[in-house]
Image 1 (cartoon, rainbow, N blue to C red):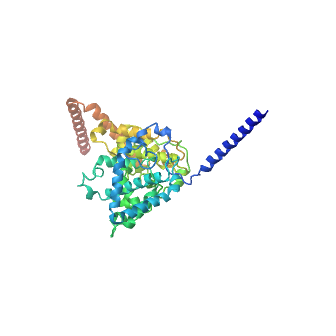
Image 2 (image 1 turned 120 degrees about the vertical axis):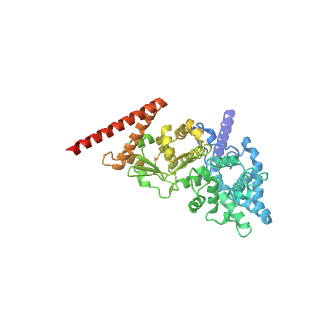
Image 3 (image 1 turned 90 degrees about the vertical axis):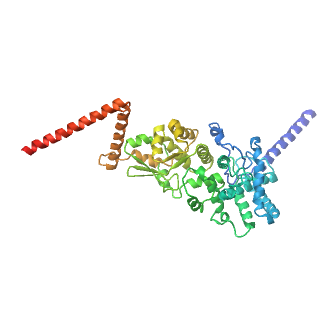
Length: 469
């Protein structure tokens, strides 16, 4: 009897301890205020892991222990050293000021990440400090490229086009981000201790965003001048670099009433070749500064040019789409654009049409384009949409208006476009069938001459006859 009572008391004590341990765990759970840096969903990673994984540099805590990226840590520390050498007289005290400021941001930083960060406060602050200083020095050097062009031995990074392209890729990955307030804090402290007068990089409006966009501009897929980028960066902000890129793409005055009235994807656009054959014209808009600024007016679809770079474009779009998939309340602008391009570029012939109209600028060489480069672009957009859940197709209005475009013959623009397409098709058939060998070419020319002379003879005979009477 005593044994059973002791066992029950012991079990009750164990149960109480268990409940206490659960309460302690619940007490450690902190509700995140604003998640902004996420782990890419596994269903997307499995499709193309290299598009979401850094190649040479880790930024932030998620990939910090990746052994394949440890070799670059020395370069990051060297760049951090050079950043403080810009303010050599105040460097020791400034380093302490930066470290303390980052340490004070620990709670805010942890609430930005979607997964638990295993590093303690000082370890996390050191990661953010080194990575943030590296990014700032990289942006500053890139903005003053000419100054470093002759210092290849001193800086093997900024003078290596391949390394710069890889860094542009790595700094735009969803899992490879640090909160933008960390960069802004470091930038303001460094700026405060810079010798006077301040360099131009520190004096432009919203200069840190401008420096970031100038460095990442080749990855944006847009042909914009540095002045245009600077103008657009004046009011631009974001939670991290990838968020800034996303906000850069989204038009400031996007017509929500148009895309909001139809959320379904039932109205699908045909491929570019079918649209052209139906008399719908496709034009490039070189004046637009936004990739999503697509218009349809009087039977013409007008689109800004897209510069496709083999090593960067796909990764940028995939990570922007993954960011949209993970973020709550973020409209699926980039996913909508990718889906629209998937439908427009359903075949290599569709890509060729948009390429000839300068809507698609393919980074591949002419030889590659002739031997399957267009097919690569088609595959790129098809695979980019795999595994993506689209809640709000922002271009449903465009598909609706294109599908409902009036088919009356009184539409002269449409009639002219259709006649040109038909004539072009007949010319292609004629060339493929009758201009294959020199003998068939000569026979076609001879037949044409005979037909022409016969027509002239008939004309003059009829003219002579009517003049007699």
